[in-house]
Image 1 (cartoon, one colour):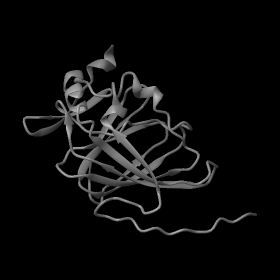
Image 2 (spheres, helix red, strand yellow):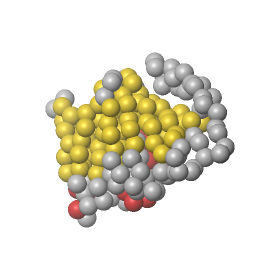
Image 3 (tube, helix red, strand yellow):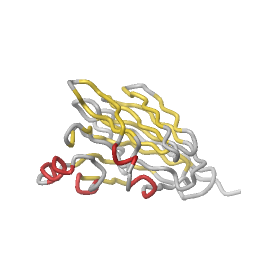
Length: 189
């Protein structure tokens, strides 16, 4: 039997950075077609802000191993819609995931392939269990970066394509100063 060496890393809880981790930056231009309000998207695209950053510590993609990552999801909106991560199913759909809120506030939008949706608000200390077969997207509903830790099987993979065209069946918006979860009109098209 071959043993891997254990590792330990320090997460900067103020910034969400894991020193030495693989960094992924998603700007607004990487989310073309994801937001409902195309006019507001195009206006904000002139500045092309960073929507989120991911700091991942990854293992080989094999059964039994775990990856972990922090995400720093910045505050902002496109029209009424809060900034969010792309969202995905796992390529191996029977894989689960754990999210843990480190700083800020937001929530997780979860959805089955049939369109059943759950919204779970998150803040510092909230743990969300994402069951197998559920797509998931995080949303920043606050005024500061929403930072969270995710732990997932190394062989889970990401399936972004299954939800790219229609998105999620629900949208998370701000209306009259309140967070609201509403039907996505594109879902019924």
